[in-house]
Length: 223
Figure (tube, rainbow, N blue to C red):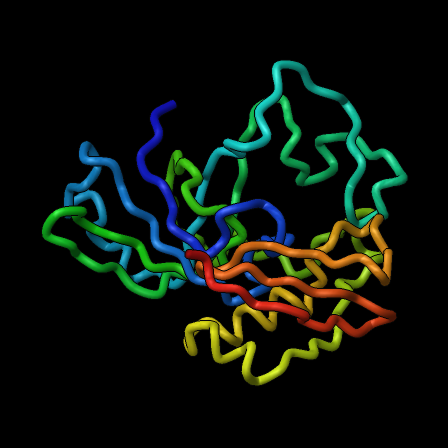
């Protein structure tokens, strides 16, 4: 297996990442290694609206593996079979995301760059492959969702002062609010007094959660 690219996103750490691809309109750029910066390798890709990205859970490698894991959607208290989940702790640390291909840029030095949205991938993550998404075969509206069917994605009301929001790039403010509304905390943590924090778009975001209201308490630009 060869690593063909890496991704640039606004999430330098795992905390704060959307739980699945497509849930939040987060932006990213896939930059290829020199061997794969050949324009002809991308011929025809611009005609597809979505792509599959095969990547590595580079921060979740383990020497051993467990047949069961604790899915965050179940509060971290119930075990399910690893192959019935999308847990990063797998026999092989492979991730799969379906994202929207916004455009292909051509840089004189870096070659073709894939600009995507809907990414749930940490900044710097190695990429193994890119494949086009085919709606006629990849889409299954009647598919069953197993244990996830009884669970709804929790949405929070986000309270953030205008002066804080001004510290975020205007093009990324909506993305930040969507990430916060999706409740970035682990499902098994519910301490209303606790201050949480994560890095997004070169800023540290701090917040608290009480009931269904998330309040941003600080936004600090990274030095």
